[in-house]
Length: 136
Image (cartoon, rainbow, N blue to C red; front, side, top):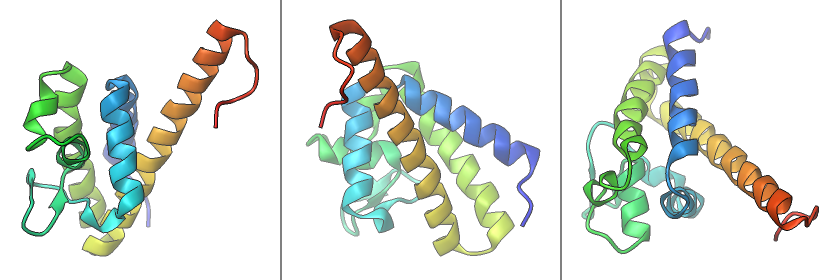
């Protein structure tokens, strides 16, 4: 299956916005995705009834907040993430025809972006502290 230019552009934009989101939100998204990838949904904020939600909702729940809207006040980057994620999800779903496959692909892309952001944070911390060994 060929990935189109729009999908590539959305993936890159989503990665950039995730990289710019504050660390607490980023770590909360990572914890939520590590816990259960089947909770990730697109197209709506989410529901505590079934435990599914968008990236910001899952992060908000990790932080003990009611919903993703609470995180949008933190930065413009947090505002952009849901729209980019929803459009990216929709393109992947249209390409694959499978909600399960769309969830797997989008989960992987977000997880990779989060891992890259964490690695950059570690490298920046090491550069500031002069400690060449990564934490953890």
